[in-house]
Every structure is written in C-alpha cells, then in structure tokens.
Amino acid sequence: MSSDIGRLSRRLGATTDQSTASSMDVSLKEAIMENLTLGEHLEAEAEAESPESLLKRMLSIKSAVTTSSSFAQKQQAAIGTDAIFRGIGTGSIGKIFGHPGTIFAYKLPVSGQPEKLWNNYTKHLRVYHSFKSLPYIPDQVEIPRCFWYATPDTESFWSDNLERFPDLPHYPRLARHALCMERIFPLPRPIRHALVDKFCPQKARQTIKDSDSNKDCLVRPCLGRVKYGTGGHFFTLRNFKLHANKIKELEINPSELIIGMSHALAVGSLIYFLLSLSRQARI
Image 1 (cartoon, rainbow, N blue to C red):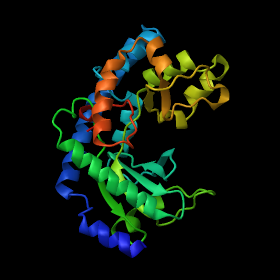
Image 2: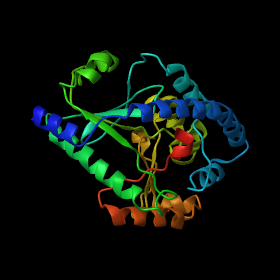
Image 3: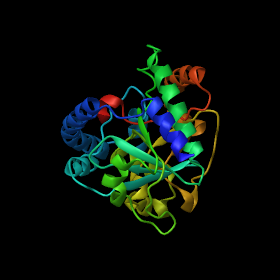
Image 4: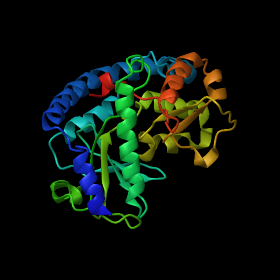
C-alpha cells in the first residue's frame, strides 16, 4: 500500500516547489511584522466594544482581521528553529500538527487506513485546482493550498522532522503517512474572548480563555442549523459552530456567507467552511 501511494504521489508531482516555499517564508515574515502592529490596534479597539459589536464587525467577510500579536510573536520566534510541532486539531481522518514559523500544517492518519488520507489529498488537489479556474470565487472563498504527500518511507521528510512530533501515549511518535497543507491560522484573541463572553457559561469563561487548545480557534458557519444553549463544560473554540440563530442574533448579514458558500458547493459537495484570516493576512 505504501509503495503504491508513493508511486502515485511522485506521478502527480506532489512535491513542494522550493522557490515557492522560499517566497512564502519571506511573505510570512513580512505578514508577521505587520500583524504585531495590527494586533495591538485590534486589542485596543476590542476594549471599547461589546462582544456583540466586535463579533458583528469582525466576523463579516468584508472585515480586515489580523492574527493576534501574541500568536504573531510566537510565529516570528519560531522561524528557522527546530520548534516542536504542536497538535492543533483532530478530525475523523487525521490529527493535524502546526509547523511553527511556517504556513505549513501536517495531517497524519488516526487509523491504520492511510488510503483515507490519500483520498483526502487527491480530492483536496482537485478542489483547489477547480477553484483556481473560477475567477469569481477568490474574493469569496479561499481554499488552503495542498503541497505534498509523504509515506513512512519518505526519508527526506522524516529524517529531519520525526523528533519534532510529540510522542503521546495514545499517539506514539512514528513515521507515518503525512499530508502537508497550508495552515488555516486561528482567529485572534479579541474575537476568541468575545465568543466566550457571548456564548459560554459564565462559570467556565476564564477556564476556556486560558485553555491552550482553545487558542486554535476557527469558526464554522452552519447556516442550515439552529442550536440554543451554551454547551456547558463541552464548550470549545476549535471548529466553533456559528449556527443560524447565532448569526441572526449578532446581526451578521447572512447573504455575505450564502453567496460564497453556494458558489463553492457548485464546485464540490463535501466542502467545509470556516471563517478565518484572508490569505493576504496569512502570508
């Protein structure tokens, strides 16, 4: 199985172009420096706004949002170092690790069935190239780039990076299949805290704000679903579901989301949507 996937990977040209990677590193450094300044302005603005007002303004797709200065500082400090990869999410197919100081994220399979991850990779490529061929999509929806696929035998990756993955009791450090893709960076602290202040039970708010895992905050709009209540102790900012009733409550214009999402669904049906930083703010 591994050798078959490896041959297919080479046939599809699933390698990172070094000049492209280098230019992205330069752009990342520039973006981080801008974010250090912009993040401070966002923090100052947030102090003067209610959670509802901040969320209405910042979760609009027309808003200019930057990463928080603390996140940008960590990214800047990690550039060119051998920082440990950090787990930033888990899905049905794989665990995702962020590569500090770069725009890369690695998805590793959670089961002994790497063909699911490979299928994820090939579909990701098809969707990405389909979107690139549609000129009206980029201003509404962005698809994270998919760079390459590695197998346990990909020495060029694992010899340099195996020790940088955490060695966990439930997920030991091993050379595995790996999908390298563009990381979707988390929303900044003022937005995270506003979500907590607005939707989290009061007794759990500070715990949620202080949680490291909840710093990996991504908002997932769910326009076809309503849900009431706060979630209690199960409240999480990872893939935070912004249901239709919450969108209405925050007075966010749903048409801004509907247009982009409907265009995207015309390209492919199995597409998940997240509110995140624009690519211009990420690299």
